[in-house]
Image (cartoon, rainbow, N blue to C red; front, side, top):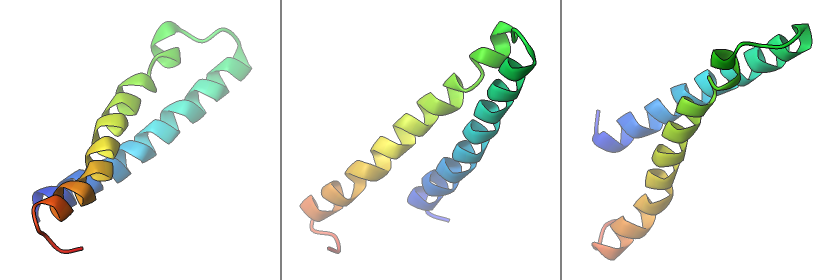
Length: 70
């Protein structure tokens, strides 16, 4: 698998992980005051999603500039 496919697949799995952590956060808040590690658990996948998403956003512009396929 090429580098771009690894990034896309990782981005998909990170989005699933992020969704699960946000859902767990809402469930914990519904049950009472959640511990800090549950409140801040969505942040690491969110930052990784930011970087992989920015990479995929910029990718078409860099390949077009290098003379790749349109």
